[in-house]
Length: 263
Image 1 (cartoon, helix red, strand yellow):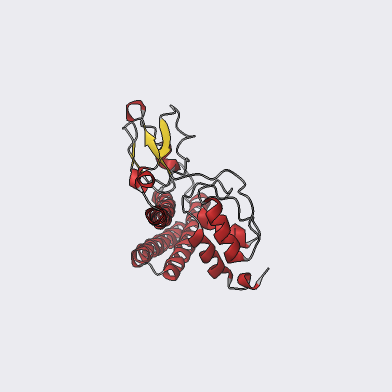
Image 2 (spheres, rainbow, N blue to C red; image 1 turned 90 degrees about the vertical axis):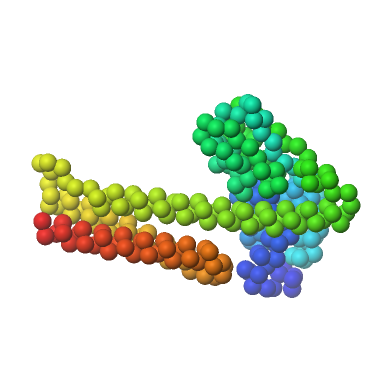
């Protein structure tokens, strides 16, 4: 390592991530640009980003003090996904695959791409069961008539891609927490049926519910700590709400367990 690498790990990861195009395409072998930045710090090569091209390789080489390398795959110009809407069957598979939530639609309804938000990652293409998604040169890139305008477009795409990907990850984490809490609430609402053992069997279920609620509370507290480190007010507020919900659920689980012990 050179002296350029002798900085705190988190700072180096952030610096590398800032140089990546934020398409979140996974062509580097990682599930997004930030994981690739982390992998580079851990020793991964710097030439695995086709959307970034040779320019990104050169910037990463200067940043890390490593030698430049030829791209592992051909460079890729900015693209945008376009759904042939008349052929769309509304399966939602592309919505689930999009890393930046740039596709609108609902089950059994036509889907459409928000072109201005699309990073051209291509991840929506393979899941489509009717092959109705095309990848075309991004119109904003084609409209950029000078190097300055192209650089401005790439900077805007990177900022937007990072922000939308982060928002999607937060949404998925929030929805997963909510599903876990709902499952735990259903477990608490269960009542022994006619003829069932209301003693040891019920008590065991209540013990499992308490354990699950304790785990949920730990996870929500971890999410809150992460949000506070990020300093995003809306995320902090949402995380605090999740902590409050998990705390109430744990209180209910403990009361239900005490009731089972007395029965």
